[in-house]
Length: 448
Image 1 (spheres, rainbow, N blue to C red):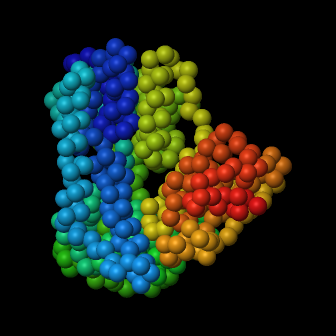
Image 2: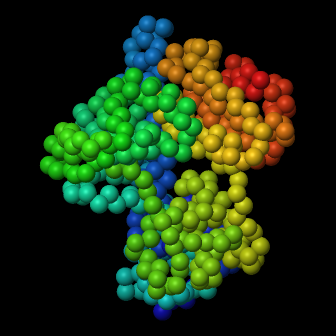
Image 3: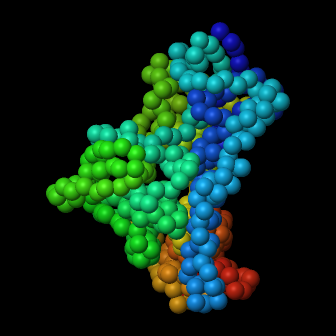
């Protein structure tokens, strides 16, 4: 059995950062991954998605400006776009493995399974360590329907050599909407099937309603209170069984994409053999991101029960885990406002409290909400719809929640995140002179 100071399971943002910090501090480190090294974000998630989103935004914006100064709308060449995307993603596994080798981190390809509280097995190799860090990421949620194996997941969608003419997205979260906007701007007919009453449930319902309208105006069909109950057929000719409000019907489509959520990837780990507790959110951890049931084990990133499944959160949690392994449990996980963005056209962004949570908090809440489609920043690009909702604690004079819809929301939400986390008074925000004309220059009007 090979002995290390620490074993890290997963080579994504959380795992790679933890391993590097531990090794730099003089620890012997092994790192394991069953997938190509580099993790989801850089190869199969947010980074490459944003490349596709960027292209679709160019098409959308040029199309909106037809007859307003732009003579010809842009068009997506899908094979060329995927080729460009691969210039970012293809080198990552080899580059990541090379970085581990140069740093002196011992890398293993394969599925890690616990065989004891402080030991794992990869293939025929057994490894033991004082500390084991689980950073295995997430996986597509099982749907439990006939024909589930016929679905393409989000990774597969972003590897398509050709984009089909018609696509069904199963699920109504941010991945479904982002992919739907990308595919629609590339010329596909898209249907989103969501089992809930409203899509994008973590986001502000009033702004979601506006985004849904803009999405439908693009020609994307959104079926709510609808459940996919079966998929049959073959590539290019699928039949999707749907149950909606007690009625069953079917959709014919060329491609069915699984966008119905990604739970923690725990299935292969044999956590019970390590005495590691877990739940539907992921590995159960305490304030130090340590397993209470097995102190040798820590967890960070999407696989841990705390925090949002976002890359910056994974990186932040990796810092906490590394510090606690190196210095004893001194650095605590503390709740902080973390922004989240749906990269559609236009963008939908949120940070802090929802209106419902703010009203239940006992604070005296003022809600500033308006549609801003007729504001200059929207009109100059012929933006289809935009708006905002800001939640203000009147007694404290502080912003407690911010929700934005419109081009530039992905950047402005960062300013408002800073304001919430560092308790910048609303009056200071309102009287700050921002560059004009920008989305931030409208803050004074939003905060009145």
